[in-house]
Length: 381
Image (cartoon, rainbow, N blue to C red):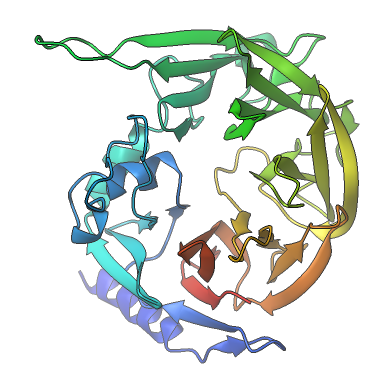
C-alpha cells in the first residue's frame, strides 16, 4: 500500500509542474489523474465508441433523436470522448462547453472494452476499425510464414445489413468479404482506417513486403456492393534492414477537395517523413512530403496522430509528434506539402497517443499521453 501511495504522490507532484506555452499562446497543461497512463484511445476508436454508448456515464448518452448504437445506420455520431487507462485506474475525457471534463472509471471496465478491439479470428494483438455498420481488421496471421508479429495475409470487411421491420427477434444479417494484397505482400500490423471514397465506404491499410519494405493500399466498395483493392502505392524501403513499416497518420480531406487523402509517415521510428497521398482514378499519388516527424514503431499500438478540425468549412490540420517525440506539431496539408502551423514543446516524449476533442466541428483540446505516464492537454492553435 505504501508503494502505491508513493506512486500516487509522485504523479500528483508531476501534474503540479507549470504549464508550457508556445509562441502562438497555446498552452500545454497536465491533466491530474490518480494513475499512470499506459494506453489511450481517441474519438472514433472501438474503445471510445463502446464507452461513449455504454451508458456508464451521463456524457455517454446520445442526444435526443440520435442513435447511440455505433452499429446502426443513419445518425450514429456518439459523443466525442477520449479514453485512457493504466494500472489501477481509467478515465474518460470529454468537453463540457470549452472546459475539459475528466470522469474516472474502473480500469477493469475499460480493459473489457479493449479486449473487444481484437475480434474473433483477427490477428492476435491487432485492432479493428469500426465505423457505423462496417468493421475492418486483419486475419490469417503470417508469423508461421516468417512474417512479423501482427501482420495478416487478409483484410476482412464485415458489414451489418439493415434488418427491416420484423415481428420476431432475428439475428442482424452480416456480410463478410476478404481481400489479399497479392504480389508477395501481406498487411502490416497497423490498424486500418475507414473513410468514404466517391460517396461509398473505403478502407486504408498498410502493406508489407519483407521486414523493411511497405506501402499503402485502399480498398473500396463498388456500386455492386463488392469490395476490391482500388489502389496501392509502390513499395517503399524503411530505415535499415529492420525499419518499421509505414504508419497511417490519418485519413481526411486535408486539402479541401471533397475527397479524402492519406497522411502517412515513412520510417516512423527515426527521422520520419510525413507524406500526403492523393487517391484519384484508381491510383495513389504522392502530393507532398516533409521530414522530421515521428510515428509508432513496429508493434506499438499507440495512435500518434489525429486530424485537427478547424471549423468554418476549412480543411483540418494534422497533429503529430516531431522526430524524437519531444514536441507536438500542428501541420497544414491544404496545399499538398506539409506546412507547420505550430510546434508545442512537451514535458516528456509522446508515447501513448494523440487525440483531439472538438466542439461543433472545431478543435478545442489536443490530448497527448506521455512516456512518463502523464496526460497533457494542449489548447488547439
